Length: 133
Length: 290
Ligand code: SF4
Ligand code: SF4
Image (cartoon, rainbow over all chains, first blue to last red; front, top):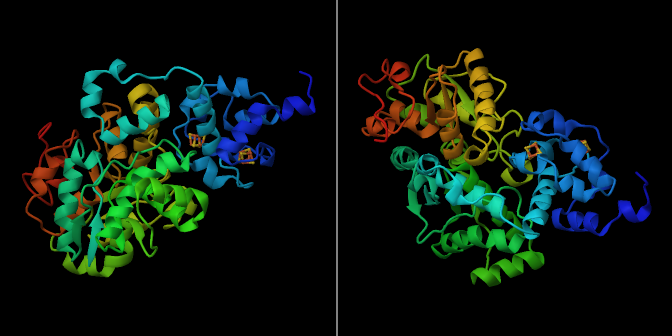
């Protein structure tokens, strides 16, 4: 891949930075976020890998990662990052970018009825917010 | 002590036993709960609000109602509601354009001087461990519990601003006050998978089985939580061979305080609490969907 100033500081990177209020170059790739992420084993790339993609201007690739949807917004990464990067917010901004661009990821009518009966209300609300914007 | 009570949606649906136990335990400890009149959903966003106005207007409206009723403290038993209400409070206190817009959208003027606390926090900071201990009439001696804080009770630390985000002990202190033995364990602040339970059940099953395995390894007989979603995930997504009951901290407090309705709350549990609790309360048992 050919790196260039424009590629790294693309319009989308600026958008992610604006939405999340985080500077992607603030991350120094220590991996502490990944070390504590409960979802890391279901992600490829892992959280600091997503940050790396963003640093390289690869926002579209970052938007296609499983990490974006696997992220449970547990805030472990954000509360532990030695550089004060709030990765939970970065993930949220990637989800919003995707949702604003198109279809909701999950439709409530597609969920099993038994689950909808049993799950606490807050799961339904936050699930809808996460997957439908 | 009078406080504004924000029950939240879950406590009105699947977590009714949490609501009932909260409403019984608080007055027994001298806390008068006054439900926020005409409260609305806190919005339960999946992460921080990226659009502060949209996502904070909902919780801010509840703060406006509490302020109008002259309250100083708003207490939320649910960890997620606590997080949303507190985030809204922080934004209002910070001021600036976002705070102005939120007040305009909601149609109120924020005066300041309002506090938002989780119920764990209120019991720990304001009621106090000593006062709780003095009221215990049925100490849960020898009951080994793993206190599970999960994410939103203590994180993000700048919002929750309560206890230690990595090694919290408030709930452990409350359990010790009622005679139980809180164990030291590794998964106290791990994530249960939250709403991924709806769309990625298997992933949550793996997380839950790790959490419960840690609890077992630490010698716990039960897990104690303050969050309806943690409670439901841990019971619903557990591996079949682990039959560990998951209690709301208020349920065990109610038991230790000798409150009459304990049996009713316990009926709603998916995992029968009888094997763990019958030595303190003969006849306590689960009946599905009760
Ligand atoms: S913990 Fe912070 S600095 Fe370290 S890799 Fe993660 S985001 Fe970057
Ligand atoms: S907020 Fe998301 S990325 Fe960060 S630790 Fe939790 S699950 Fe992982």
